[in-house]
Image (cartoon, rainbow, N blue to C red; front, top):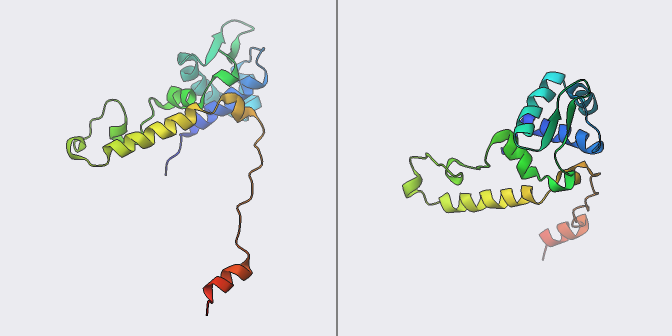
Length: 155
């Protein structure tokens, strides 16, 4: 199963809490409360986000964190890569492959293509979009039961 780590998921939640108050500097404790996460978890998540330049940190009695730029300008690929490193669906789809089968592998090019498609999809979604309400999904079209059974009983 492909999935981001819990810390990456939590990072997105923390960033959306910051996006909710873009002009305020929020302490880690305030972010933990808003995100419904434990303070040590929020503190752990904020370090790589700050290192990646996604959040700014301020010291002092009124210190805390705020987004480094507008939520619409932060893509999901930046969040994922801040938390997990460069995206690589397989060992060989990354930049520095150490796979011993790479020289004779027939699927490497396709995995790289898939990696690029996933990266482009993540690049195409901003933090602001993640913060927005979930749009309703159209219901899948279903074949009426009468048509399905008629098709199965052709004479």
